[in-house]
Length: 225
Image 1 (tube, one colour):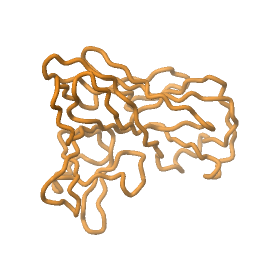
Image 2 (cartoon, rainbow, N blue to C red):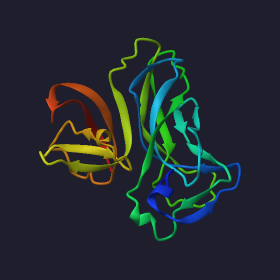
Image 3 (cartoon, one colour):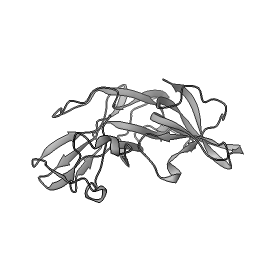
């Protein structure tokens, strides 16, 4: 699990770090969501929530690729040689796991008839080794590919999340590391909260006819661990 920051100076962390020019810094995916169905051959935008890096003006790359069974994102940042105030051994606990909300484009997928592909990405469920050029990959869900007529109304989702309850008792699931008010998703089944604290979840985001906690766009959970 890797704390992230682009604006370390603003946080008052005064230890300088020096990143060599051209360094590739892989990052894990905290959360991703994507269209549940797409048409064959149609590239599709996938939301990626990733940890950031300690550098000025890092260049993000989603690392998207596809084969006959899966779409895989192995995101990374290209790091220059800029100096920036950085985290020390003592300061990670002072930061509340700040992540970056970004996106990548999955390539068009082949499907003579309707079929599914796995959606995979670099995962944080392992110890990170400094200097590693790749992280292990895990499955976040799947996407259905149709020759035509894909339904764009639902988005599949998966990743690391935390449970929160507001002052009115409304339960939401928040992708780990995101703290903006709109980042948390209302849980469709408000009573289905077992095992949701700091869990890896899979499900889908969709519209409901009866609002839940005043929201019609909610997260339906399928699995958690």
